[in-house]
Amino acid sequence: MTAPLPAVGESPESLVRHLAEAGRAAQRVLARLDSPAKARALHAAAAALREAEAAILAANVRDVAAGEARGLSGAMLDRLRLDAGRLAGIADAVDQVADLADPVGAVIDESTRPNGMTLARVRVPIGLIGIVYESRPNVTADAAALCLRSGNAALLRGGSEAVHSNRAIHAALVLGLEAEGIPAAAIQLVPTQDREVVGAMLTAAGLIDMIVPRGGKSLVARVQADARVPVLAHLDGICHTYIHAAAAPDKAAAIALNAKMRRTGICGAMETLLLDAQFPASQAVVAGLLDAGCELRGDARACALDARIVPAAANDWDTEYLDAILSVAVVDGIDAALDHIARHSSHHTDAIVTEDAATAERFLTEVDSAIVMHNASTQFADGGEFGLGAEIGIATGRLHARGPVALEGLTTYKWQVRGSGQTRP
Image (cartoon, rainbow, N blue to C red):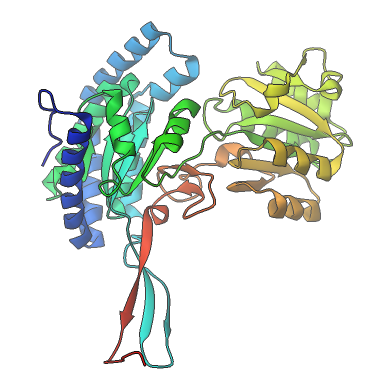
């Protein structure tokens, strides 16, 4: 069953109910499929994406032109834009997910009780997952692949910025899935950009099992505030890199430059650089960033390192720039760095650069973020880089899943109890 077009006068709540009921029926079909069947379907979907390259890129040209006319920022346009290489990467990611180990049915642990009953905790799909996202058309394919591989149905609601790209990608995916006998309703794209549909999804408790928002702060904040369905999300990516006194200067400079400037518009981009007051090469690190075109906003001691650094405002330490702008502070040792991160981190990704193993271990233990790193760029905060295939998002909460959410994060578990006639006294 394909996603129904909204009937004349149909309310957003009615549309979401129809889509959700179709998705839940399709999910019951997915639950019966074995791992090879799901893998074949995803390989077929990836092939269909490649075959539809011309149509998808033409649709994307329309979206980019409309975005430019609307005055979208450079970072937003970068997220939106597709070319042959990026589309090939999207198809490759679907193939990679198909080749990942299927988490469904995996036994987490098992035991035998004194009365002879055996107990096992077994991974199972969550059910129907709603994904609400903005300008990244790759999310359409990534979310579809991850949901299907983990036995979940998906209800996708993309942003108006990428409406034509999303529809072209979704159409190709459905062709591939249907060729392998997967019902089209397993992966549905909401057929309208009516913003009230998002509200209907957020309150569809009992129909949608989990909501995953992918987008800017205003979208995620709205989802977290209004949802009556469990939400898996992160609000900000305020990522720190702390260069300790014992950092290797060349390593520190390279990591800082990459963490900020490789791609400034992703959630794993460094937004605050902390320089230890005893680190001897701070001037070289900030000069490298400034020379690369990054605006630096610093505290008084940071401003003294280079005349090109401008004074930071109080809100700079809590700002996700998603641009070539970086806040910089000089701190007195590991305790001050940990205190700054505790006050300003969004619990996404934070890193330390040091050759002192004991200090690195303390940082990894004490920083309360979904991802903590030692001697590596925060730009590695990505499911693909973690070997998880595509990711459906980064979760910064403390329940269920944390960090890059891929296949295992899209499952829950059930207890399976096997007895031989036991009754409870």
